[in-house]
Length: 221
Image 1 (cartoon, rainbow, N blue to C red):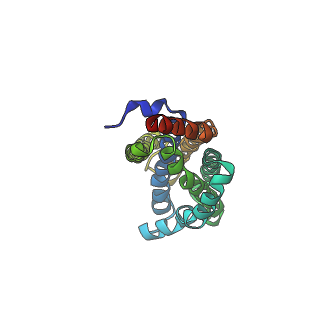
Image 2: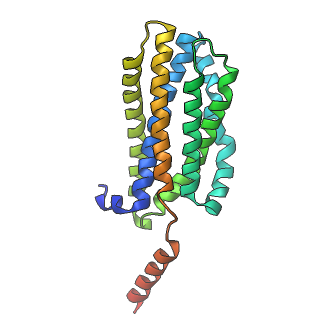
Image 3: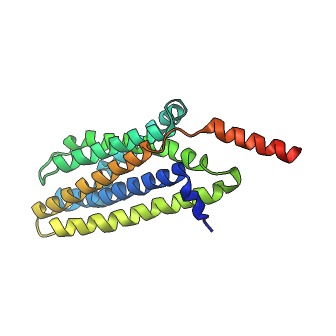
Protein backbone atom coordinates (compact mmCIF):
# COMPACT_ATOMS: atom_id res chain seq x y z
CA UNK A 1 0.00 0.00 0.00
CA UNK A 2 1.07 3.58 -0.63
CA UNK A 3 1.82 5.53 2.57
CA UNK A 4 -0.12 8.80 2.38
CA UNK A 5 2.68 10.52 4.29
CA UNK A 6 4.65 10.52 1.02
CA UNK A 7 2.44 13.38 -0.13
CA UNK A 8 3.54 15.50 2.83
CA UNK A 9 6.93 15.62 1.13
CA UNK A 10 7.02 18.71 -1.09
CA UNK A 11 9.25 17.18 -3.76
CA UNK A 12 7.26 13.94 -4.00
CA UNK A 13 3.87 15.66 -4.13
CA UNK A 14 4.80 18.37 -6.65
CA UNK A 15 6.77 16.01 -8.90
CA UNK A 16 3.71 13.78 -9.12
CA UNK A 17 1.43 16.75 -9.79
CA UNK A 18 3.78 17.74 -12.62
CA UNK A 19 3.67 14.15 -13.96
CA UNK A 20 -0.12 14.07 -13.79
CA UNK A 21 -0.47 17.35 -15.69
CA UNK A 22 2.23 16.53 -18.23
CA UNK A 23 0.64 13.22 -19.26
CA UNK A 24 -2.82 14.81 -19.19
CA UNK A 25 -1.82 17.36 -21.82
CA UNK A 26 0.43 15.07 -23.85
CA UNK A 27 -1.81 12.02 -24.29
CA UNK A 28 -4.98 14.07 -24.67
CA UNK A 29 -3.39 16.12 -27.44
CA UNK A 30 -1.76 13.19 -29.27
CA UNK A 31 -5.10 11.36 -29.25
CA UNK A 32 -6.70 14.21 -31.21
CA UNK A 33 -3.74 15.10 -33.40
CA UNK A 34 -3.40 11.56 -34.70
CA UNK A 35 -7.04 11.74 -35.79
CA UNK A 36 -6.49 15.18 -37.32
CA UNK A 37 -3.94 13.81 -39.77
CA UNK A 38 -6.25 10.94 -40.72
CA UNK A 39 -9.70 12.50 -40.76
CA UNK A 40 -8.91 16.05 -41.86
CA UNK A 41 -5.73 15.71 -43.90
CA UNK A 42 -6.38 12.26 -45.30
CA UNK A 43 -3.29 10.32 -44.23
CA UNK A 44 -3.26 6.65 -43.34
CA UNK A 45 -2.80 5.57 -39.68
CA UNK A 46 0.84 4.82 -40.48
CA UNK A 47 1.26 8.17 -42.21
CA UNK A 48 -0.29 9.91 -39.22
CA UNK A 49 2.12 8.19 -36.84
CA UNK A 50 5.12 9.06 -39.00
CA UNK A 51 4.13 12.74 -38.99
CA UNK A 52 4.05 12.81 -35.19
CA UNK A 53 7.58 11.36 -35.04
CA UNK A 54 9.29 14.79 -34.66
CA UNK A 55 7.55 14.92 -31.27
CA UNK A 56 7.93 11.34 -30.07
CA UNK A 57 11.46 10.66 -31.33
CA UNK A 58 13.07 13.69 -29.69
CA UNK A 59 13.67 11.96 -26.31
CA UNK A 60 16.03 9.57 -28.11
CA UNK A 61 18.41 12.45 -28.80
CA UNK A 62 17.66 14.91 -26.00
CA UNK A 63 17.19 12.68 -22.92
CA UNK A 64 20.90 11.74 -22.56
CA UNK A 65 21.90 15.42 -22.67
CA UNK A 66 19.09 16.37 -20.31
CA UNK A 67 20.16 13.66 -17.88
CA UNK A 68 23.70 15.04 -17.83
CA UNK A 69 22.38 18.57 -17.24
CA UNK A 70 20.04 17.49 -14.46
CA UNK A 71 22.74 17.32 -11.80
CA UNK A 72 24.14 20.71 -12.81
CA UNK A 73 21.03 22.85 -12.93
CA UNK A 74 18.69 20.80 -10.73
CA UNK A 75 16.11 18.23 -11.76
CA UNK A 76 13.17 20.44 -10.78
CA UNK A 77 14.39 23.29 -12.99
CA UNK A 78 14.91 20.97 -15.94
CA UNK A 79 11.41 19.56 -15.46
CA UNK A 80 9.93 23.05 -15.30
CA UNK A 81 11.77 24.21 -18.43
CA UNK A 82 10.77 21.04 -20.25
CA UNK A 83 7.09 21.43 -19.44
CA UNK A 84 7.24 25.08 -20.48
CA UNK A 85 8.67 23.97 -23.83
CA UNK A 86 5.96 21.37 -24.24
CA UNK A 87 3.23 23.88 -23.39
CA UNK A 88 4.70 26.30 -25.94
CA UNK A 89 4.76 23.56 -28.58
CA UNK A 90 1.15 22.57 -27.92
CA UNK A 91 0.03 26.20 -27.97
CA UNK A 92 1.77 26.71 -31.31
CA UNK A 93 0.07 23.63 -32.75
CA UNK A 94 -3.33 24.94 -31.63
CA UNK A 95 -2.58 28.38 -33.09
CA UNK A 96 -1.40 27.04 -36.46
CA UNK A 97 -3.80 24.17 -37.13
CA UNK A 98 -6.44 24.61 -39.83
CA UNK A 99 -7.90 22.04 -42.22
CA UNK A 100 -5.37 23.12 -44.86
CA UNK A 101 -2.29 23.75 -42.71
CA UNK A 102 0.76 22.30 -44.51
CA UNK A 103 2.57 19.70 -42.47
CA UNK A 104 5.93 21.49 -42.53
CA UNK A 105 4.47 24.29 -40.39
CA UNK A 106 3.81 21.80 -37.58
CA UNK A 107 7.26 20.16 -37.58
CA UNK A 108 8.91 22.81 -35.37
CA UNK A 109 6.09 22.82 -32.73
CA UNK A 110 6.21 19.01 -32.64
CA UNK A 111 9.98 19.11 -32.16
CA UNK A 112 9.74 21.71 -29.38
CA UNK A 113 7.13 19.58 -27.61
CA UNK A 114 9.38 16.54 -27.95
CA UNK A 115 12.39 18.39 -26.55
CA UNK A 116 10.29 19.49 -23.60
CA UNK A 117 9.03 15.96 -23.04
CA UNK A 118 12.60 14.63 -22.99
CA UNK A 119 13.72 17.33 -20.56
CA UNK A 120 10.92 16.26 -18.23
CA UNK A 121 11.42 12.51 -18.50
CA UNK A 122 15.16 12.60 -17.83
CA UNK A 123 15.07 13.90 -14.21
CA UNK A 124 11.56 13.10 -12.94
CA UNK A 125 12.32 9.59 -11.69
CA UNK A 126 15.37 10.81 -9.80
CA UNK A 127 13.41 13.67 -8.22
CA UNK A 128 10.65 11.32 -7.08
CA UNK A 129 12.92 8.55 -5.79
CA UNK A 130 15.33 10.88 -4.01
CA UNK A 131 12.43 12.32 -2.00
CA UNK A 132 11.89 9.07 -0.06
CA UNK A 133 14.03 6.59 1.86
CA UNK A 134 15.83 3.91 -0.21
CA UNK A 135 13.60 1.15 1.18
CA UNK A 136 10.52 3.11 0.06
CA UNK A 137 11.64 3.76 -3.50
CA UNK A 138 9.66 0.83 -4.92
CA UNK A 139 6.44 2.27 -3.53
CA UNK A 140 7.33 5.77 -4.73
CA UNK A 141 8.12 4.53 -8.22
CA UNK A 142 4.88 2.57 -8.40
CA UNK A 143 2.90 5.62 -7.28
CA UNK A 144 4.55 7.82 -9.90
CA UNK A 145 3.83 5.28 -12.65
CA UNK A 146 0.19 4.99 -11.58
CA UNK A 147 -0.24 8.77 -11.45
CA UNK A 148 1.25 9.14 -14.94
CA UNK A 149 -1.21 6.56 -16.31
CA UNK A 150 -4.05 8.34 -14.51
CA UNK A 151 -3.00 11.60 -16.14
CA UNK A 152 -3.13 10.00 -19.58
CA UNK A 153 -6.58 8.53 -18.95
CA UNK A 154 -8.00 11.81 -17.68
CA UNK A 155 -6.30 13.74 -20.49
CA UNK A 156 -7.94 11.66 -23.21
CA UNK A 157 -11.33 11.71 -21.47
CA UNK A 158 -11.42 15.41 -20.60
CA UNK A 159 -9.91 16.76 -23.82
CA UNK A 160 -12.20 14.51 -25.89
CA UNK A 161 -15.14 16.05 -24.00
CA UNK A 162 -13.82 19.54 -24.77
CA UNK A 163 -13.44 18.51 -28.41
CA UNK A 164 -17.07 17.36 -28.51
CA UNK A 165 -18.28 20.57 -26.86
CA UNK A 166 -16.46 22.95 -29.20
CA UNK A 167 -16.53 20.96 -32.43
CA UNK A 168 -17.00 17.39 -33.56
CA UNK A 169 -16.75 15.09 -36.55
CA UNK A 170 -19.37 16.81 -38.72
CA UNK A 171 -16.94 18.67 -40.99
CA UNK A 172 -13.22 19.32 -41.20
CA UNK A 173 -13.77 22.80 -39.79
CA UNK A 174 -15.72 21.59 -36.76
CA UNK A 175 -13.08 18.94 -36.10
CA UNK A 176 -10.29 21.54 -36.10
CA UNK A 177 -12.32 23.92 -33.93
CA UNK A 178 -12.83 21.23 -31.31
CA UNK A 179 -9.26 19.97 -31.53
CA UNK A 180 -7.73 23.42 -31.16
CA UNK A 181 -9.87 24.23 -28.11
CA UNK A 182 -8.81 20.95 -26.50
CA UNK A 183 -5.12 21.37 -27.33
CA UNK A 184 -5.12 24.91 -25.90
CA UNK A 185 -6.47 23.50 -22.64
CA UNK A 186 -3.87 20.73 -22.77
CA UNK A 187 -1.16 23.36 -23.17
CA UNK A 188 -2.48 25.26 -20.17
CA UNK A 189 -2.54 22.14 -17.99
CA UNK A 190 1.03 21.27 -19.01
CA UNK A 191 2.11 24.81 -18.13
CA UNK A 192 0.57 24.38 -14.67
CA UNK A 193 2.66 21.23 -14.37
CA UNK A 194 5.73 23.32 -15.19
CA UNK A 195 4.87 25.75 -12.40
CA UNK A 196 4.51 22.82 -9.98
CA UNK A 197 7.94 21.56 -11.04
CA UNK A 198 9.59 24.94 -10.45
CA UNK A 199 8.00 25.07 -6.99
CA UNK A 200 9.71 21.84 -5.92
CA UNK A 201 12.84 23.78 -5.06
CA UNK A 202 16.32 22.47 -4.49
CA UNK A 203 16.44 19.34 -2.29
CA UNK A 204 18.23 19.74 1.01
CA UNK A 205 20.68 16.95 0.36
CA UNK A 206 23.12 18.06 3.02
CA UNK A 207 20.47 18.21 5.70
CA UNK A 208 19.09 14.80 4.77
CA UNK A 209 22.56 13.23 4.71
CA UNK A 210 23.33 14.75 8.08
CA UNK A 211 20.15 13.30 9.53
CA UNK A 212 20.99 9.85 8.15
CA UNK A 213 24.54 10.02 9.54
CA UNK A 214 23.28 11.13 12.95
CA UNK A 215 20.80 8.25 13.00
CA UNK A 216 23.51 5.77 12.05
CA UNK A 217 25.82 7.07 14.78
CA UNK A 218 23.06 6.80 17.33
CA UNK A 219 22.36 3.19 16.35
CA UNK A 220 26.07 2.34 16.51
CA UNK A 221 26.35 3.84 19.99
